[in-house]
Image (tube, rainbow, N blue to C red; front, side):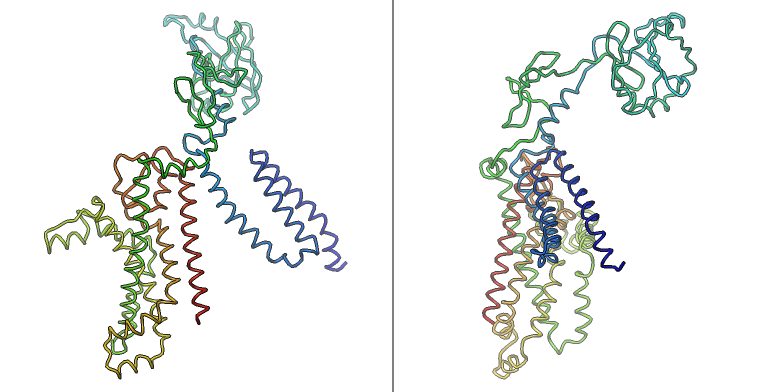
Length: 520
């Protein structure tokens, strides 16, 4: 048989196995409580089988992997983030209603009776638990203790082995003679299996695992009523699930933890506008983000363009050496440069303050003063960004015809005149889309803020963690993953706003590029 014959023979068995694997994956997604995502996965996988098995869609066989990858790795995270932005998903509301209810019903408290101390003894290839009540008098004899001790039947102590209640029998009636008990270390190795045991005393009392060496009667903290309301066993207080807040709440407003995830519509977006305690730092952070990105582009453009013009001066000796040295900040990994600058700006031991103190007798608080912290960030980011602009401008200047400068020199023009009349007009159009891209990059420059200041110094008296040097992306990170009260829903809403802002910048970039192409 030729290679083609083998391919035809194996095609359908391979297709069948692949289809079964895909159906199993879809079922697992559905079983995890995500029917919508299971339906979308089924549609994407079904489309893949149609493309590769049907001759109708033959032309799309090479495009489908890229399109599918874009949907899975770009569209899916975006849609999932947008969806979270319409919920109260946070560290206090992580679970679904069903899982939160199950967690609360599993909680228990020790009952009024005394605990039962236990020891673990080998019995052939199995094990027995020997239990005695902890309320024994100090002068009790070993014989009396043995007389009121109870013991389990032989147990394998394998995880999940004992799901039913295990009846305890008096030691004297069991016929078991206990030997030396296992040491504590060996008991701890079987802790997981011990925690699943439910023991029943001869008088009908139920015992559960309550500690390293103890079983006790445990009372459920909550019981579920017929209408789904939870009743607190100790006080009789009723707690009802509130679909607006995502918590079980009593009539007095008491909430049970953990809460559950619910949809809140545009609540997170309205909070940015309506809540004055949140709106204040948010608006200041937004303004600083725009100012930071804009000034960074302006400063890097000024420094980079100036250096590019100077290095283009043919009378300048060692231009290649200067160009190489000035490009080094771009060649060094950014996070290393940022950490170096963090040490240089240290108020007490940094070289910058040592020089300023020696020359002018001042030691600025770069990390404590909000204005100085912002100045420091702009200085560091200008240092990191100017080589990129310098390289771009150097290439663009090289493309300008030399005849223009020769004609300008004949007419007696000065260098500044050459720059403003020839150089700047000819490089500004091709440079504009790149400057917009640089603005978009710095709009989301999380690494610089996180490594240099981590957003600090912080605002005071805010409901959410916020710093005076935070930009929107670092502010979002702090809300989602740092400090107490992690609010993933609010962070997702802010991330969605950032996405649309950057998307508008990208559209402007494409529009400018299209305009430049049409004018050529």
